[in-house]
Amino acid sequence: MNSQTVVSLFDQPTGEDRPRALPLPPPPADWPAPPEKDAYHGLPGQIVAKIAPHTEADPAAILTQLLVCCGALIGRTAYFQVEATRHHPNEFLVLVGDSAKARKGSSFDHVARLLAHADPAFTSRLTTGLSSGEGLIWSVRDPAGQDPGAVDKRLLVIEPEFATVLKSTGRELSTLSPTLRSAWDGRPLALLTRTAPARATEAHISIIGHITQTELRRHTTTVEIANGFLNRFILAAVRRVRLLPEGGDPDPLKGTGLSSYLTSVLTHARAAGKVTLSPAARDLWWQIYPQLTQPADGLLGQLTARAEAHVIRLALLYALLDGQKTIAPEHLHAAVALWNYAQRSAAWALEQATG
Image (cartoon, rainbow, N blue to C red; front, side, top):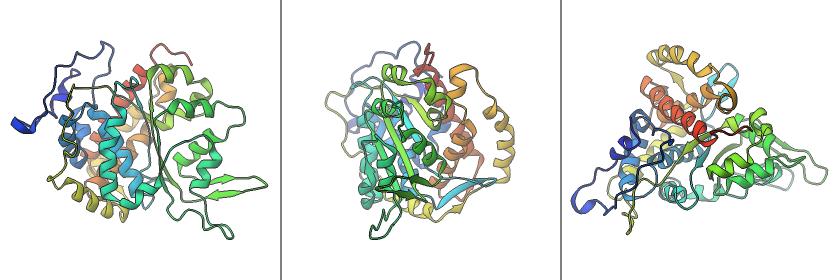
């Protein structure tokens, strides 16, 4: 599939509904092939199809941020269990693209509008400035004494300058990396200090970061790779996919009913509880699991070492956004298609990097 095929899938509006766009030069020769069509399954795909023609942002950027945001909204009440480990629908994502050219911020703005409609109260659970483990724990802390703690343990961290996070994790005695690793795992978080001890249980933390390829290469070290910090993130290469001198429709979902439908789907998802595999999906999982667990060589292998965990979390999200409590084969196919793109993105983003 060439780099323009999937983009063309979202050029549906015709006549007066189609924004006026100028031709865009082809992507660089080494640019990763876009996600396969399976990745745009169900409601997320419908939403992206309506938004994409009206923005210069990459459909992959809209899709991945939409999935992470929905997982953040759902919270810990839905999960998939493997042995004693529960995988919740929280994910960590980093969009990799040129500064001011990849339209990373524009892609999130459309998703943020959906977010505000789906759960107006959730905007108070958006934050930025991820610089220390202590600050993160404090945002989702448990009640203690006269301190009521955080009533809502959901937290979505948006980091437009993710390079600062990588710099922070590289500092000596920094608690950010181990705290974030525990947060992705869904484990209790603790801050043990004499002056202000804090603990956070049942925290549900999701992260969306934006970074350039140059910054990612410069600030990625063997420490973050070896300790499993970076392989808890999905990397997605994104770029400007069209030129809209006058912009597109500022509210492309207006009148579609998709915003209201997403609200009802998210409400239903919060009550899902334990999500399981359907018999057909279980058979498929047995087929693809060995491929997911087969390590790649070198740096890429270390960055994608949690493939099976990411795929099952993505499949969980696709199932929940289908209004289902059972993961079906189409949800696994969608998750694998998106993960394959993440692998291609990681290979491109750190091409020739040595750590």
